[in-house]
Structures are given as structure tokens and as C-alpha cells.
Image (cartoon, rainbow, N blue to C red; front, top):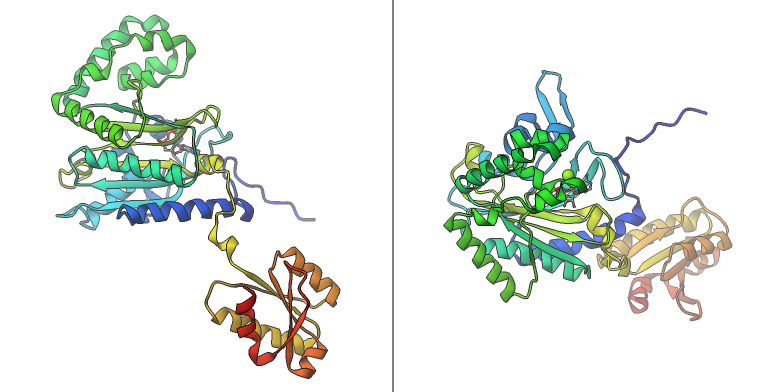
Length: 422
Ligand code: ATP
Ligand code: MG
């Protein structure tokens, strides 16, 4: 026997039974995007590495440790995308999507991060992304959060909690950063290696540390909300009011800094206590400087990403897929001539175009074997063609879901008859 080829660690196959749930989720999500007038965009999975270095930031975990980067045949450094925003912004600038326009875009697809695989954390995982460009005010922040809340509601996912924070504008953030650097420098002796590294390059990331020994000094650290500039402060107040008037509870989490460098003002996460330490189902925020940073105009933007593996884990119902509600027909055909006719009939049924799923028996078999297969396929109706039917120019119809008698129908009337059964 030949040796088997192994899969790559952290890269999951999505099997058909899992995908039923995924398709249900996708169906609902697409409906919600339509309701908010978001349009789909699909960007390449591979981009120049530079794009992620310049946007996500050199000193973030994603860029420093988690990227899949490689040289192509022309010696260019390319990377598998670890997130969607950078590519969408790059593509939007290239195709003038932001010029005198305010696009609202959504996207879905695989992302790649070299992390330690565990439940809810993979090296290939999927995100549903939404981004809105050109809107300055906090209403769009609220709308995006409301849109995600609607998705949870339609998927009947509870136990999700909204956490929000504001990181301010670059000026106030810089002041805060210095303050934080001074504070943590005074506690240098307690810091772990990771945090010492962050202290120089990215001190706000220390707030994100999960090390229990650091929690008390993190707790006592200066708070960003005390350093907020007036504009960010006002923006944040309006957002909070908007959430309250729409009945969306939230908690203020002043430790919420998010893993990527490009955020400004509003940041938020939806977290759950149902998924162990992989608690964040959705995260996002404003990135007002990013489009300009990448060579576009100076336009504000906001976006967020839902982790699809984590979300589907929380979705209980799998049979909401409309495809599962569509009727199924199995065609039992015994004999060469019958098989030939069955193929023609199956195409005619599909021509009806009303979503009926048709399974034609393949590779022969006795009546008994074929009925067994029909049963296993979960079909609603069996159409039977045997020698008798061929001779009399009929097709027999049998319901697979009731005890109704098998019925013989004239070949020409079979399509009409099917409609009555379904
Ligand atoms: P975490 O803190 O769990 O590592 P993150 O802050 O790195 O998350 P984001 O970059 O904000 O994640 O990505 C948005 C969402 O994508 C996350 O909230 C999560 O649901 C999902 N996600 C991120 N990394 C992974 C992964 N390796 N496997 C599965 N889902 C992931
Ligand atoms: Mg991460």
C-alpha cells in the first residue's frame, strides 16, 4: 500500500456535515448584510508581505510571530493573509473605491496565522468581515455593532457580551503611551519577558497580557479613557448612547487594546464564556488613519471580523439550511432501458427549476437494494421504473415518508403528479 499524505497541523478540512451548519450561518449573514446595504468584496489570499508589516504593525504578535511568509520565484516576499482589512484597503485604493464614495463592504474567507492549534484556534481559519469607509460620526460604529447583534439574534446565539473601549486619536494615544511606558518601567522588576519586550515597542499591549502575576499592576495602570481627547470622548459618548437606546448592553473594558496597531477611537469585542480561553467571537474598531497610511486619501473607516469556527461552535441549530427543507426524489431504475429513461426523467425534473433535489440510482442493483439506498438518502419520494413500467409507458410513484399506496402514473403526466406530492 502507498503511504498516505498527511494534512498540515492546524489546517482543518470542513466536511459536508459541518458545512451544513456553515451554509446556514452564511445564509443568515448574507441576509443581514443585504439589510444594511453592505456589498461583497473578495480579495486575494496572498499579498505582498509589506502590506501587513505596514498596516498590522511590526510589533504585533501577528506580524512578529504568526505570518506565513515566503519568497516567490522572483524573490518577492509574499504572505498568506492573516486578516482581511489590509487587503480590502489596498484593493479599495487601487480601484478608487473610496474616491467620492462611501462603500460598505463585507467579505468572507480563510485567514492564516501560525499559532499553537487548539479548539477554536487554527492555522487556517475563517472570518466574516465588514468594513465601512468614509463615515466620520459614531452612527456607523453603532450600526456595525447592531448588525453583529442582529446576526447573533438570528442565529439564536446568546451568552455573547459586548465590550467596548476607545483608543483615542493618535495624539492622545501617544501621550497615554508615554505615561504607560513610565508606569510599567517603574514596575520593570515584575514584568515577564514578553512584557519587557512590549514595554519598548508597544506598551499598550502589556494591558492585554494574560499572565496572572501581572494582573494587579495592570489593574492599577493609568487608563486610556482618562487621556482621551475631546473629539474621541464625544464620539464615544454618542456611541454609548446609541447602543443604550437600541437596547444593546455593553461593558466598558479599558484594557481592550486589540491585537493590531491600526485602531483609533472605538474598539470592541464580542466575547463568550462558552468557548474556554478562545473567548472572542468578533472583534473590530475604527482605523481612521489606515487608508492614508497606505497611500489613499485621508478617509475614516471602521470594521470588524467574526471568527466563523468560533461562531458556528455556538450555533445549535443545523437544520435551518433551506436546502434541507427542499424535497428530494430518488429514482429507482432496474434494467438498462429503465436506467436510460431515468436519466432523461431526472433532467426533466431538474428543468422544473423549483429546487427539487434529484438522486438517480447509479450502478444498477435489485429493487430491494435500490429502495434501501432511497431510504438512506432521506428522500421524500421514490419514482420507480422497471420492466413493467417501460412496457406500459408508466412510472410508479411511492411516498417514502407516508404509508400511501404506490401509484402508477402515465409517463407524460409524471411531472404534474410529482408537484402534488411535494
Ligand atoms: P485572539 O485574542 O483569540 O487571538 P485576535 O485578537 O488575534 O483573537 P482578531 O485578529 O481580532 O483576533 O480576529 C478576529 C476574530 O477572528 C477573533 O475574534 C476570532 O474569533 C477569530 N480568530 C482569530 N485568530 C483565530 C485562529 N487562530 N483560529 C480561529 N479563529 C481565530
Ligand atoms: Mg490572536
